[in-house]
Image 1 (cartoon, helix red, strand yellow):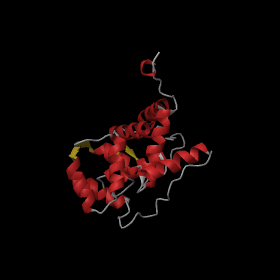
Image 2 (cartoon, helix red, strand yellow):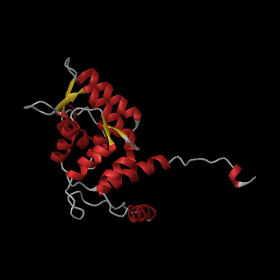
Image 3 (cartoon, one colour):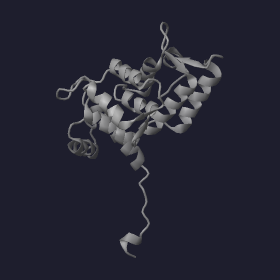
Image 4 (cartoon, helix red, strand yellow):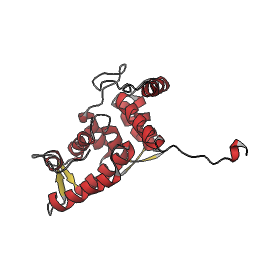
Length: 209
């Protein structure tokens, strides 16, 4: 039988491997993506840890992404759920943020002309958060519109962000995410439907990773 007629099977480990590579790209923000890919998968073949540049390093003359700049980006969106890619690209450029990071997030999220802002913000925040707990803490700080007290957001928003990030990064099983969300909703969240950073960072029974 000709090779073109043979059934193609996707290796079971491929989706998770590609998700981890995508996360490494966002964290490292390489100028040369192809060379980074060569180094990354070459290290895996040799049984070594893949290269990930320290987040404190800056690339060229770009401004380093910071929580404060994420807050500015969020304020520019002004509460909209959907934002146009060209508009967001202009805002990104005005803040002098790395264009390759913007492209990496766009590619990872498979965004097109219209972008779901919370998804874009979540993936961008993951470039700063070492763990998913760090990322969700940062998102609470960016999204919180209350002064005083620990950062807090609606639990429905937290549920969406946690589920989406875990799925995109591929490092946490869906069953674990479901268990954690059910526990938080039933035993942690009060009648106001609000989750505070302390609820998932200082509760020993909440293990988001």
